Length: 250
Image (cartoon, one colour):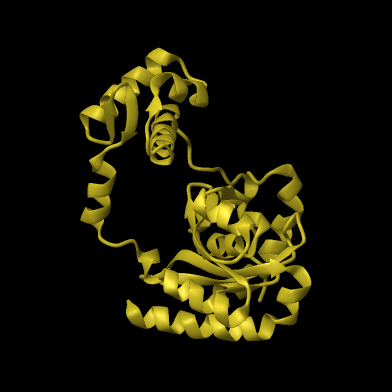
């Protein structure tokens, strides 16, 4: 299959400074279960205290934040919206699924989702403290530097995909062409097998998790480069088997 050619001048969706700040405030509140002060929020956002105060007041008034003793925590509105929308499609993959894959393959197994322009591991099964840290602290990852990211990129709408690739970091630009060469195969198979793109000696095999015909998450087995390559065939077969079960659940 021929690799698609991105259109010239692909532009990312325009950002809005106020929306960015609101998103950052909510993200910070979610990561601070005991609350964050207005001064701390303004410092982290590098924004004027008066601007942050206005946004915080509006978010408290609408239930997105709560304020107690001058500390801000996440309010009930985000939880209500999640319940209103129903269970996220990515939740078809359970923690027990990840544990089963980990036990079967011997590899760290992660569930990754796309938030904005970044990949986050939101669950994992592993004996590795490194991956436990990444998943439990929701550390963002580069989409072009891991197998899960390639799966999620391949599942994007073309407009968003082209804009992501056109704005990739300078050090990631050589990976754009490699990804585009593999894109037709990824779209066809829903798999990325040992792309060799990590900045450290880590390799991965990832499969798409689909709902309603779109990619909503990625499940990946990751670990030592040589070990993953040696077990690649068995890992691919097991991920395909699990993917069929997830499809039957929906």
